[in-house]
Image (cartoon, rainbow, N blue to C red; front, side, top):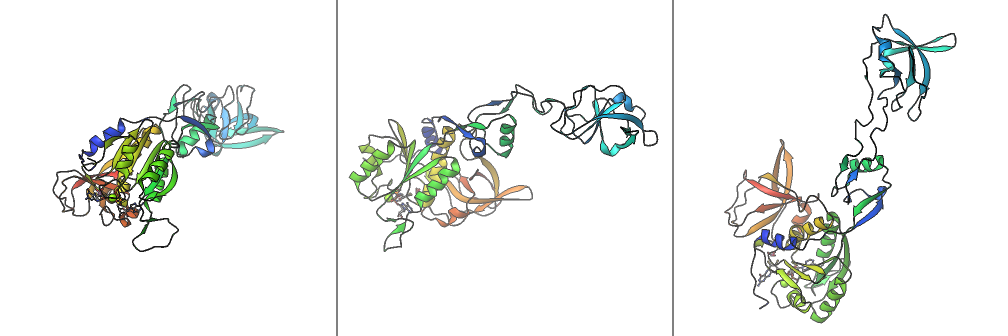
Length: 413
Ligand SMILES: Nc1nc2c(c(=O)[nH]1)N[C@H]1C(S)=C(S)[C@@H](COP(=O)(O)OP(=O)(O)OC[C@H]3O[C@@H](n4cnc5c(N)ncnc54)[C@H](O)[C@@H]3O)O[C@H]1N2
Ligand code: MOO
Ligand SMILES: [Mg+2]
């Protein structure tokens, strides 16, 4: 019975996982640690930016009426009654023929309605008093950076679900967010299975290989914004595997295993799911690689049974696990962003099932081109290092030619 498998279309499989989506909690982190996190609340401006009218130049704040007719030959002479830099305020209102020497960022004094740049003026001392000769007429409101011209109080300035980039950090700091509400990262357990596996530090032995998937998945988890928790390798032993997996399920938001999901004599995951009384959402997907990817649910957890083959494991994670993490984090972009690209290689092989090939895209002449990242068999590992996208070739299609347009799913964003 365990060997009976019904392949379902990729979209259907993604939708089945989607039905289990849950959004995680919010936590507050210092703004210095908020970069790359996902904002958990809309941020609304509680004041105008700038908060006061200010000078965008070093120069003189004055009354524009006093500059009418000013020229280099016939400058208008104003008395300089103050001198302020950014951070200082000149509190006396200006009256006729007065100016305040003002630096970029300083508040415009009351009574002034324009700023003339230093370059259009000449200072002069007469009998111990300071004057400025204005050599250019100024229009009302010229060279003033107005209160609220950047952000209006009450505006939603950053939406919940936004990834915090350096620009978002600038806004958060502007509005006094010393700590920032972000989506709590899901803790996701990683277990590798298979008696053939050696740990990364162990020397090779006959018939055995090093466990690369657990480390790869952990890195994929980090890239997706989750916290990987690696629980080690399980030998192909049913009782101890059930015990370990049951215990781990109590400690993590989701669990990923790699290997042992196919129909081999030592592929124990189907029996483990049965022992855990897990509901199997699917155990076969009409796709290559990763056709044996299995997703099951228990009362309070989701288990991703990714293939043991490295490339199938990688693709299974990106297609099925990653969207769940995006949802958990409340991201606005769910799953890998897809764009069209021009194939820069012939792919003659027909696709009875949907295929997700490791691709390498690049820009040339303002066009996105894509090539294969390397050899594409599901049990190969080399091409993964060079892949920056997955090329989707829909099931039921014949081969593709260089120049054809294909959909690529961009990795690493
Ligand atoms: N009779 C059939 N045989 C196979 C089928 C099938 O439908 N019928 N499916 C094939 C496909 S497709 C895949 S993919 C693999 C899936 O195998 P499992 O998920 O059961 O994984 P394992 O058997 O444990 O290992 C497969 C392969 O991957 C290597 N491996 C396992 N874990 C790791 C790891 N952590 N790091 C690196 N490499 C790992 C393992 O040594 C095997 O070589 O089954 C096909 N067979
Ligand atoms: O479909 Mo397997 O999952 O070839 O790699
Ligand atoms: Mg197997």
